[in-house]
Length: 264
Image (cartoon, rainbow, N blue to C red; front, side):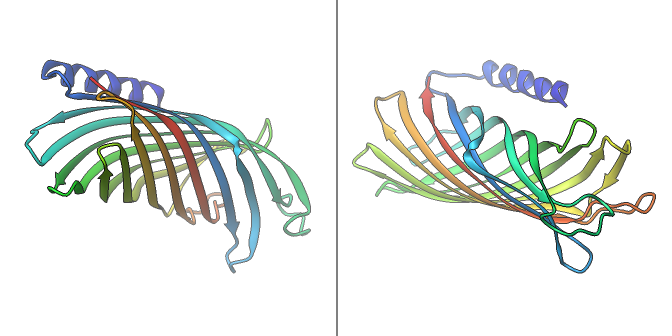
């Protein structure tokens, strides 16, 4: 997985560098906090277990590099590569498998590591009143390692197609406010369970994301940014192996991001 990410990054940097012009690159970096509200459900819809965290429990960084091209007076296109890595603990509530004691009979701490990366194309049309519309499509990869104990590690991983639509407005050439909606259709969805050394094929993974970025233009090249992101994730029940399966789950993963955008 790490090798695939590195190959994508190198290819992106080399390709864009060949055609780079002054002011064509956009680099951004942010500190990220993530809250998690994750729940798994049984065959009859009963709650099996949950994971919860606040924004300070799971933290990390996000970096991105974009290349602007086909720039006109009121439109441009952008290819961008984004990479986010997070880590931290969640509070687990559930039960021991087969104990019959029910939800909440076991409380513990789960260690999490999350990697989310994508390559995307976005077209932006700006109107004379500084209002703009944008749309695009991305190809992403998500990897979530959920360590319930040293012997029980579950790793979720999938690729996704990510169509997106957004709008924004710049006020007094200083403050920029945007609203973006993105849908992520997961495919090649796999769960690897270390304790039984088995891979399950998940029934699907779908994520809806709403983001609200706010930027303050400090100079021609430097922008300070703040972004709130709300997501709803649905993972469908997996196939059955040796009488075991991964249950259906939902997650509300929300993010706070503070960072900078640098144009060069």
